[in-house]
Length: 176
Image (cartoon, rainbow, N blue to C red; front, side):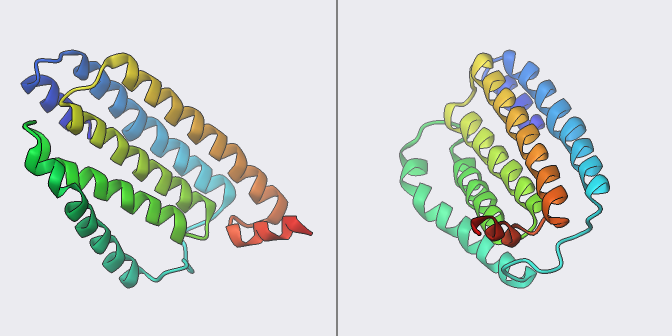
């Protein structure tokens, strides 16, 4: 994603996208993975053993969601004159897959990963759909992402402390 920002910045003659690419790289390649790894170690969980949908079915559904994205964005791709129009279906597909991960995972940490996939899709759609994006807008998105991630991290720690599990099905116990 950061490399794509560099390429669009180069061909779109928008040097501010280089700054966005550096911030994106620092945030999504260095900072957030370290925080996720630290959170995983602190709450003591491994991979998700029992998602709502098994891995094989998830791969099939994700593929179908990407195909749906191609069908839904076809009119936009055909009428657009942007040089990046070919990537628009992939960005929408990434958004769909991120939402799918959020919906079908039982562990809160896996849902956070789904949120990050969703945000990557939104960032990709923004840069491909506009062939460049103002720096101030992207900085606002980064701040929202970081704050959202930090809030989710706090929620995950509280869920773990309260239920001694990150299984979101256990949250239904809060009703009683």
